[in-house]
Every structure is written in C-alpha cells, then in structure tokens.
Amino acid sequence: MAPTTRDDTPLWLFADQLGPAVHGGEHAHREVLLVEATAALRKRRYHRQKLHLVVSGLRHAERDLGDRATLVTSDTYTDALEQYGRPVLVHEPTSHAAERFVHRLQKQGLVTEVLPTPTFALPRKDFQQWAGDRTRFRMEDFYRDQRRRFDVLMDGREPVGSRWNYDEDNRESPPKKQKTLGLPKPYQPREDDIDERVRHDLDAMDLDTVGVDGPRLFAVTPTEAKRALQRFLEHRLPEFGRYEDAMMGDDWAMSHSLLSVPLNLGVLHPLEAVEAAEKAYRDGQAPLAAVEGFIRQILGWREYMWHLYWHFGPKYTKNNALGAQRKLPDWWANLDADAVTAECLRHALMGVRDRGWNHHIQRLMILGNHALQRGYQPAELTEWFATAYVDGFRWVMPTNVVGMSQHADGGLLATKPYASGGAYINKMSNHCGDCAYDPKKRLGDDACPFTAGYWNFVNEHRDMLAKNNRTQRVVANMDRLKDLDAVLEQEAHREEF
Image 1 (spheres, rainbow, N blue to C red):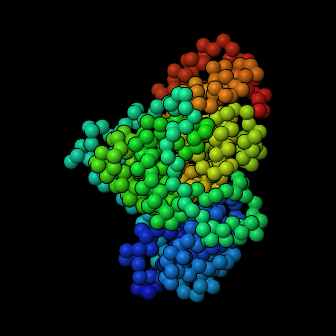
Image 2: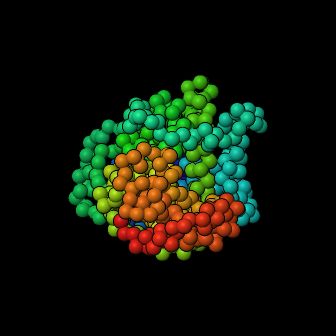
Image 3: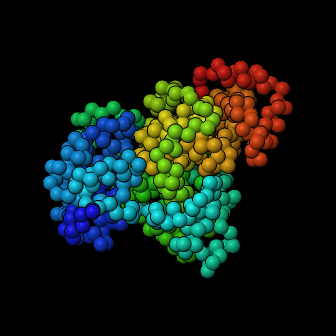
C-alpha cells in the first residue's frame, strides 16, 4: 500500500516544472526541493546555452520562491534526495526514463506519490480515451477536439470565421527587397548576478558541450515568460501568420514567439499563451489567420507531440522504416557551419551553433530534409535534436524527428515524407540568391544538393513512394528525367554540401 502524502510533504520540482502550475494552487503551502545534479549535466553532449538555461531556471526558482525553496547541489538526484533527508511529492516527469526513475524512488520510500503532469492543457488519461484503438493519427482531428474542449476560437460549436485552419494563408514567401521583416526585436531577458554565477560555474566544470556560449535569449522565470508573451502579442503576432514558414538570412527570429523554452521549462502554461492570443484577436489586435496559426502550434501540435510521445512508448525511436543508417557527419554533430557551402544549410547550422534555436521550417525543411535525403540514422538524429536545441527536452523530439521529419515510423504520424528540392527553399527563403549552388540545377558543380538529393531520395525509395497516393506523381516525374543516372552517380560521391 502506497504511503499517504502528508500535508507538509515537500514538493520536488524538476528543471522543466518551474512554474506556478506545479508549485502554486493546492501546493502553494508546501516547501519546495530543487536539485542541481552535476551527473545529469555531464550525461550527454548538450548545447552550452541549454545547460545555462536549465541551471539558471533552477537558481532563479530558488530565489523567487524564497524561504519555501531548498536547492541541493550533488552528483546525482538520488544523492540529493538522501542528503535532503525527507520523502518528497513529485509530479510526473517528462520522459520515459525519468518516469521509471521516479517509480524506483517511490519503491525506495524517497518519493511518496506521483501526481499527474500539470504543465499541459490535456491530461494524459484524457488523451488515452481520445486515442482509443486508433492505428492512424491525424493532428487535425486532435486539434479540432482541443478547440472544442477548451472553447478556443469558437462561436458556439462552430469555429470562428467558419474555418478551422488558416494554414493556406500562412505560407507567404519572405518579402522582396528587404533583408528583415523590420519588426521590433523579440523580448530578451536581462542577465543578472545569477546568470553570471551560472556561467562561471559551467566554465569551471569544463563540460563537453556543443555550440557557443552567449547572452541568455530566453525566459526562464514566470515573470520573464509573461513579458516575452506580452511583447510577442503586441509587436509580432500580427505578422506571425503570413511569414510563419518563411526564412530570411538576416532575421533569425522573424515574427516567431520564442516561447518554446519557457513553455518547456514549465514557467509558461500553454493555456495562458493560447487564451492571451485569442484575446488579442477578439480585441482586434491581430488577424485571425495569425492567431489561429499560433494557437495551432501550441494547443494542436505541441500537445499532440507530447501525448504521442507517451502513447507510442519508449521503443518508438527504434523505428527506421526507410533503413537509414548513415552516421551524422562531424560537421553536423559539431555545428561546423563554416564547413558548409549551401546558404540555407549553413544558416540553419549557424542558428543552432549560436543560439541553440531556429524555427520549425529550418528544422523540418532544411535540417530534417537534408537528413532524410542523406539517410542519417533517425535515433542518432533524434538524440542530436534533443541535446543541441535549447528547447529540445526528451519528450519533444521523437515524434517530431522519427515521425514527422524522417518518416521512420512508416507513416504512423505523417502521410508522406517531408522531402523537397531546392525550389521550395528558393520560394520560402532569400538564401538561394547568395548561394554558390543553383536551386534549378540537379547536375554539375553548382547543382543544388537539395535538388539533386531529392531525386536521389525518390529513386532510393521508389517503391514506397509509388504506393502512396500523395507521392505517386513524383515517381512518374523522376522516370522522365533523362539525366537521372548521372544525377545518381554524382550524389553517390557527394561529400560537400
């Protein structure tokens, strides 16, 4: 029989559970335990700025919670709990491995009870009911049910504007004859003495990291998260929808919210962001297409990825339906953007190197597209995305990479592989005009590696693509290419991108 949690049992917060949804409300009276485990910081080759954000978040939480909080620094979490000397209450952690660990601690008596995760809109048990015995999943079905359930952008039982989805309105190419969108800069927190100490301590640990250190760009406290959200709503949301999928070399943030870090640290609740965006629309401060697109990212896609992570289980990352076996190249793993010629790929790697962040199209249609075409091993790629990105927590990446980006689950998540040639990149970015490669060419020294790589990918997976109604035509188009054999020979020997 599990021990009963006493009213004075302390609450242990993981580093992605730092907001009032976890430690406020019915738990506002409890003492709080925070743990800085050096073994966890050393466990993987993380981006330097990611480690800074996590440690800064923990230490800011200790400061902000005042006398309620105790921050224990130790080698491991178990050491910290034994050092603390009191059993603790926890909420469900956000990875399979952490959940197994917490249940072991519960058997040892170090944890009294494991409560449901409060940092997402939909409880896990409710998703299990929604999923039922489905074998195919469509995000649009889930998203519409989320809108109904939480009464977001609804007029009664109908969606505002009589349309559920404004994605078609949110695919504009970047504006011509300008290098940036010209929007006010995104919110950037002011570093303080805590950040200075974090940087000093990380330097002293001499960790094996990727990327460069830099100023803290993302919110790690509830107060900072509210400021970041407000600045996005006032200055960036109105332009967000139109250019949501566009890329500009001199505008890394464009109109994106940069809220993924505070959301994934638990210091901003998804419904707080969603309801604020809906209010902006209702108050006439942002167009419907922009607001719907933003809400779909959070209430739709983010929640969907979270729940499918648990639904598909820990073996999901072993999926490799396309048989991709190549190791990540050193220039990729080490974020050596200077070793890359293709402007789009170089800028995407620069973004990861310099900030540990770039937006979803760079992740999916540049980095993911390249990895898909070149057959990089999906489990290794998933690990890279989870460690090299500042918002890449363990639950985020498996379905995004294995399912959406690499089609390695055989179509369980996405109906077709997200592969494209240089034409898409040329349309949706301003990279190609300054590139040594020509997006219209598939053969020759200046052949675009995405354009040539696309046909190489189609040829390699001809049978699978020919059976898919959404991709049958590309196989027929490939069969009409008179230079296909030469393209395949060229790509078989390509070592530079």
